[in-house]
Image (cartoon, rainbow, N blue to C red; front, side, top):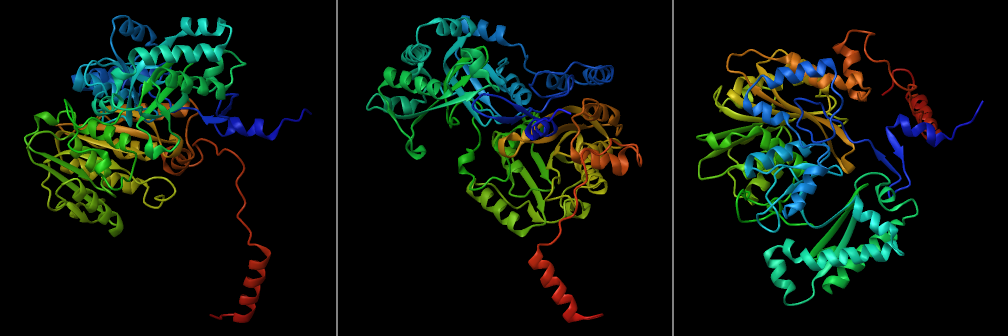
Length: 539
């Protein structure tokens, strides 16, 4: 028969795609559930089950309906309209799957609508030049130039593509680059040439070739961007990141090119955080993901008289720090965290001290044990946030009993209407733990975390019902629809084969079982001699 290259067979099995772009391999981005999803990715085509779940969620409170909305995947028309009206535009950079959460934050805190541009969240912004404070975004990029398909067509038709691109960047930078700089950087630019670096990104595999043709060279495109900025400003190109004053970033999409400047988080103005992340010595998880979880848990925090936030597995305290950054005013906020590792607690206390927070609620203890929270009265907690144990490092504690204990403590401590926001890769365990509890589904989405956002996790936001009645069937429909799409993970299949769907009725195992490793020859010889020297019953 026909022989196929080994790489061609391995790519689909690993969920990878081939491309001729600047990156050879990448994973498919996590997809989101329609209806109740927070995610801003392009929604899947709803099935009958998903339509029923969306209808059930839509019948809930107004907060649920607002969370269910996500940025339009075909938002190019809205972005054209904003640009035609003369509005300044900005992009929010965040983890895969968190675009909808950031869009919700923009709408709720600033009254701004948003849309997707090449998989990134775009929105109009007329406030501070360096953009708003977005807790669910890792950074904000104010734009000084945006070229659409018709403008790219003119560049392709020109005699020299790269000289034409450099000319376009020069014209855009001369017109609007200084308007998106922070006030202190703008003041420095009037006294001397700034040191800058230009970074280029693609919005998808092969996007630059779809925009400029198959013969487009990635290196020459990046060089054209740098040359255009230098010709417009006279700034000095700086290769050492510690000395860079301005970072110009260009996003190449299939039908657009966006030019912007990376901004630092504002320290003054509306919505400013209580303290910057740069003040934290060491964070334990991705800051944008922690900020998005805290936003979902504290959406109605303005109405709290005094807040109580609990993290039963606090680690370095990143989730509690994200909650503290959101807290406004002089009202007291009580932060309660538990962890069994002394080193993690020391780092958490150091982070709290650096940010001027009271660490009196950070104690050693097992977050699964109700006795560890004897200092917290039942029904008094406003928000319960937890990065549940999962993955290879915490496989021993990621089981049905453990998850049920965490959800049981959350139901006991939370007041009616309090939020419970969870993160885990074990969707099956989440469903089994949530189904019998007094929970109403607020939102759920898949998010990427870890290096390159390759590790897919499920973010789940719940609200404690006042009457104690639960809606576990909605959670199950929202979380398990991915199994019908063939996107189940190895951990999901393992959980299903254990208890979720009965013995032998879960999804079939994929791939051949790996043989156990045999010791190396020298190790085998050493073991043989040791066993021979000990003899029967030795040792």
